[in-house]
Amino acid sequence: MQLVEPLSDRELNRVYTPILSPLVWDLGHIANFEELWLVQTVGQRQPLNGHLGRLYDAIENPRRTRGELPILRGDDLRAYLEDVRERTFEVLDEVDVEGTEDALLSDGFVYEMLIAHEHQHNETMLQLIQMLDGYEPVDVDPAPDGEPISEGPEMVWVEGGEVEIGAPQAGFAYDNERPRHTLELAPFLIDRTPVTNAAYASYVEETGADPPMYWEPDGQGWWVRTAMGRRQELDPGRPVIHVSWHEADAFARWAGKRLPSEQEWEAAARGADRERANLDQLAFGCARAGAYGDAACDSGAVQLLGDAWEWTSSDFLPYPGFRPFPYREYSQAFFGDTYKVLRGGSWATRRNVIRTSFRNWDLPERRQIFAGIRCARDG
Ligand code: AVJ
Ligand code: FE
Picture 1 (tube, rainbow, N blue to C red):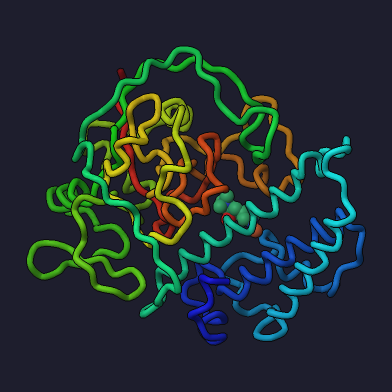
Picture 2 (picture 1 turned 120 degrees about the horizontal axis):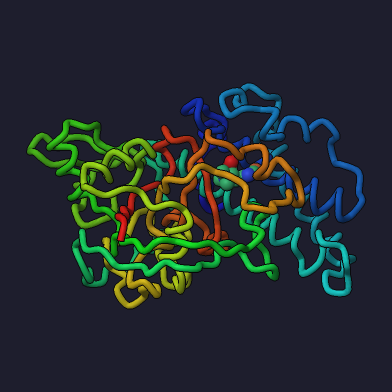
């Protein structure tokens, strides 16, 4: 609600691009999904408005169609958000998440899932907000700018061997992170810090490749960043962000490297600490590459969590023995060679969404997501 506070109903309703929903759809969808799982499924209550479910179904309604739907708007939407939350709390008073065998309720699984769902949509909303000229955040909490440990392109060695991939059995995780399994990895090298704007600008200059989204020439041989309609000098020391998979892959090859597989990424991220990472949206941008020098993970690399999502070479596929839970449309509907896996979260990711086993996915041409690059090389 803090993210949309500066916006009028007109801005909430407006379709800015066919590749993103109007903000009003995300808000209604967040509440409708909560009603579906926490009020109807857990609480066995009737829906407040039986028709809404269809309008907020993400699979039935592709993003480009969402602006035209007869969804809730204005005060009707605000009333619905409040009604659903009130009913959620009513049901929560009645349920027992400890003494139950029900996998949906046990340890509050479905509650964790709904919080994660809402928080993931907050990041999607922030993708749209990047496109709003003159957006003024209610609250900004800039990332700490420690002395960078390295300007790149230093690499760290990861031994490989038998590595454990995926989420442990206990605790909340999405179905696509399970089952946890062991596999054999060859030794490899991975960049110690995320690829910087400076490195990407050299690549653009040398090859004539397109600049990332939200870069414009400043007329003096450098670049300005134009997100949220601003014109700020591009900071060469920050991680590059808003590049597609194709761009990330081409950059890595130009640098004589390659993208890591998602398994390599996860092995390299062992010991990463999400409490010491630029997450949770309020920095409104990346910290300098290398700024979290005292928060390195076991491999010695930094900023695997937070700042920018990192594209991997991997297609979004099920792990061996995958079982959809609790609904097949979360992951299973997307498995195949259409989507690429991203890891690690960004400054725009809510902190409790991310962990080293978390798998995000998107189309290889997507650039409005908060995605950057970390390269690898065979050991
Ligand atoms: C995991 C970010 C790809 O937004 O499509 C939200 C998350 N799933 N509601 C998406 C999701 C259902 C999903 N991503
Ligand atoms: Fe959703």
